[in-house]
Image (cartoon, rainbow over all chains, first blue to last red; front, side):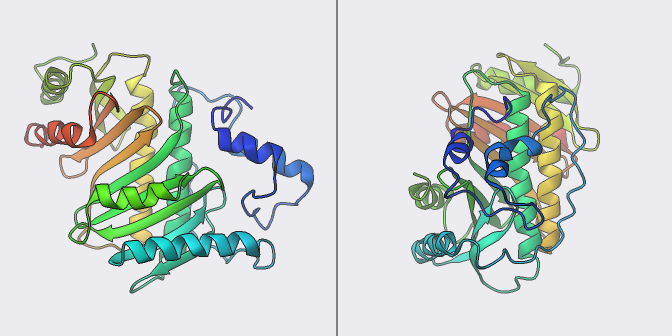
Length: 191
Length: 125
């Protein structure tokens, strides 16, 4: 354990696997497999030297098996709709499973061909940031709350939703909103 | 103190520390190698370790942007909000380097931290 032990939501998902993220399709689902889910992601001994990130090829993901978690999907859908209503000028709003990179719900304007790959890459960013905070052995332990990426004309926000191990992803043009506003809206869904 | 003020990177670290004396860690990082050009820490944070990991974060975001085929776009900065800390990665020098800054979120807000980093942009071109 150790590595992720400071992430309380992972602990929680270990004890009550009910709202846990949708498992990867290739993983055999057994009750036992859910509990230590954090471990395979994290090497037990994290060397201080950077691990060259595994080449995460952002291959387009197939949609998660629809039957598995329709309740979670409905909930994700509701969050997306609520954010979209509050920030109507968005480019993309999506709920992404932070483990698999699956898009559970999302709305886009315009071309959406790259969205699945981008979702995987964004989930990977969060995973990498967690690895970094672990490697730094911050005292007291720190949890990732959100990650903001400022581009020239866009803001990309990744808000961790600890209650589900989901990410709420928002892309919006900087001319249409400001960071403080976007963050306020997203944070409302994180508690 | 892992910097010399005779280099632009070392000078930038010094300038940032002058303006934010309470900064927990500062580093100027070369993205192609992930290594620090200059760094300083006022905490247990090892700037070399942080630099190496954060370089991967930057690369990963570039992948996400490629997937979205975002043209005419570039990363300006990446902000990571932790429970009590802000970690800020500001790309400089045509995206070949970044400034990495860790502050306590109670002491320094994002706007201040960003402004301080922005003022070092010219020095690191």
